[in-house]
Amino acid sequence: MPFARAELVSAITPIEHLPNLSARLGIDLHIKRDDLAGTTMGGNKSRQLEYYLGAAQQKNAQTVLITGAVQSNFVRTAAASAAKLGMRTIVQLEDRVPDVDALYGSNGNVLLARLLGAEVMRYAAGEDEAGADAALRERAEIERKAGRVPYVIPLALGNPPLGALGYMRAAEEVVSQDADFDVVVIGSGSGLTHAGMLAGLRSIGQPARVIGSCVRRDATQQTQRINTVLEALSELLGSKVPVTDADVVIWDGAFSPGYGQLGPSAAQAMAMMAQSEGIVLDPVYTAKVFAAIPALVDNGEIPEGSRVLFVHTGGLASLFAYQSSLENAFPHP
Ligand SMILES: *Cc1c(COP(=O)(O)O)cnc(C)c1O
Figure: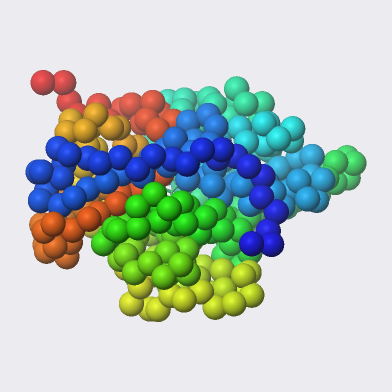
């Protein structure tokens, strides 16, 4: 691919068999350990950042600007990855989640961003992607006037979906490890991970069903978002990605009560994975994503005996910022 890439994920992440959950659910379940991708608690954003920071390096950028929720993994991974590449980071934290406590605002990803030397600015509205980008671009102008070259990683649709290239590459990696999955279950937020994996698999002729599990908006809105990202990806690549409407499969059964809030089915999924396999999921993303698997086995959409790959996209840094919701979900006996 003719796109600049900064190498941030230096090793292939493992695909591990999950024997206890496989037996319990009657499927052949594997996990792609993308929680181990990249530096400082890693995750899927490391793969996306390879292309954003590659572009930033190509422009000789000195300052990277990025926006996200207060407990954004993207923002923290950007701060860590940019530090490694010798760039400064300015992060904008948006108040997207209602009813949060002091730990939410200071621990987890916020604490790590501070340790990583990022400058932190706040943005009060949490559901205005274009507004958040505009505020970031204003801050970038100040950098430019101070004589530094800024690079903005935008959030809203309408920008080249460079991050999706990281998951097209991940699709090739998965196939190089094991080509035989019937179903891939993956998080669907900005949609870059989901659209990239789907486009990547289809581009190399892999027919596995890709199920995107909603973490940010409901299935109707998310279906539209994935279609828009796929169109933008075709435009970026200069040729139409070989994905049909029927390929876009979205599940939102554990999305409630909303972005960044842990509901009962996500909490149950977290307990199931932790207590059966000793692998911890995060309350914002991967708990809601994994919840799709037992639910879809239950209703028959994932047939018995299927070979299923669950993509663990990381997010563990936020665990300690979610202490009170986790204590509520898992009370002491
Ligand atoms: C951001 C994130 C996702 C969602 O990825 P998108 O590319 O935004 O759809 C899933 N899991 C984790 C842990 C994340 O941080």
